[in-house]
Image (cartoon, rainbow, N blue to C red; front, side, top):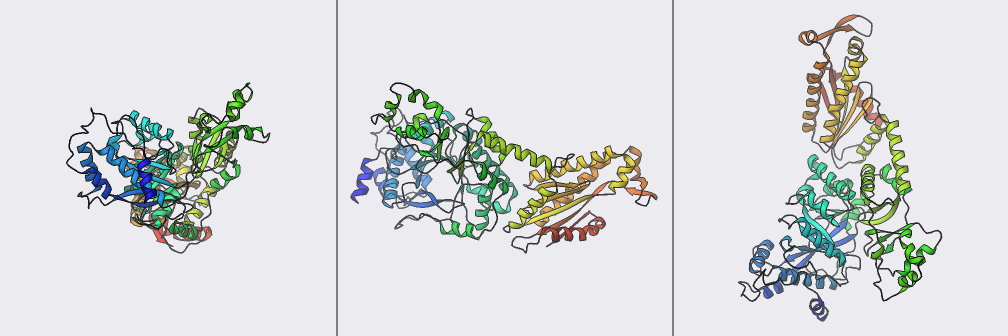
Length: 602
């Protein structure tokens, strides 16, 4: 009890008491706010690294507001705001949360996530915190659910937090007021994706597409992502595979008010990862091969450490710098230290303990990307930064290695060469090898349905013979563009087997919905193809050509037939050869079907 009392007594208010022009501090308040804050307690909910199961942090969630006479947390904060007490109430509650968190001995690198009311940003003289100077790494969560102050005020607040060693998260992202503009301009340390986009994400293609974009965009800016509201194993796997760094939700741990101790790992996440037998992607494996796992320096290391580090002739030209939680802070480059090393008193200044003993003065910014970030976005992040040293690679928010500019160029060259080798020169769609790899990756994903469709033209050879190869190429390009759009808008995969044969994969889509999309594709191409004929042929509805034996005959207008194999979630998986044989066996049924589509289940 004495330890808790001292912790609360020594903390500094998160927001200073506003000046008189903001409130009337001597006016009586309708509520007894010291008594209210004394009645409120906190529960702690884990925030878990999805790929390792380690508890990276805990969010402090208020409890006991009902015993204090309020219907919701929002009602309590609204009343405090109306009384002019919001800043002081927030500071007192933060102090209680920190004191309780310290008493549970979470570990020196486990973060405490504290909610900050967005109305306070810019309304006081400075955004200072109860966490300043405390041995608890804190993340301030600014909810996007309320209108935030102007972007400049948020940027200033984030800068002040970082100067005090406090990270910042945008909470409830995606359903609030500010959106991508605030994310871009403020560059917080974390972005918490709202539970609306996570609920049922394994069954909703649109949610998957949106979250995938948000994760890629955040990673390109060096921002760590947290998926809120994970409640099922399918949501866990989907968020993890999309690239979310951390997760939070009832599946991973409910908020607890009176734990004996906070867990270091999440047993559920460890079990789910252990049961997942899928192999890492080739791109991910190659990235680990070419990046340099340079041991980082802690940002709170003495400055003299730099002299010892770069005195080693084998030391790299730049060293990554991380915080206590191994989150990257930036780079320190040897060339920036030359003014100190070669000046008369420079080395003595670095060794002088009376100076601020932190490496932060020498850190330069460096783009940060997750190991799961697509290569194109890694290149974008590298290109957007003024520094050309390389990219810091993280996994679940923690530093794992450094990708130098030369290694990045090598990856880009390999990627371009592989794409050119396995890409149809006419349609620019992936070819057979890429199609095979994609099918194998889908067969490993047993947590959702997949539809594998083979599509080919009807009577393409006589059309080509009659109207020429140029018209044939136009037909192929016309269909391939339709196919690309369908794949892009439904998180699918489109490939060109060769000639007039195409492939399409749709994952996480119900069988009936996939049927509708495929029939739409077939009908639209039938309509598009009419533009390839002259008016007389369109009016007659057929063209004259020769069959394979050279016999003249009438042929219908150009169309597409499709065979679609439905691979249900949890169903038995077969090999590529078995799939190809099964699809080939059903091709006659597709040609004879009135809607030119035949679907069957594995």
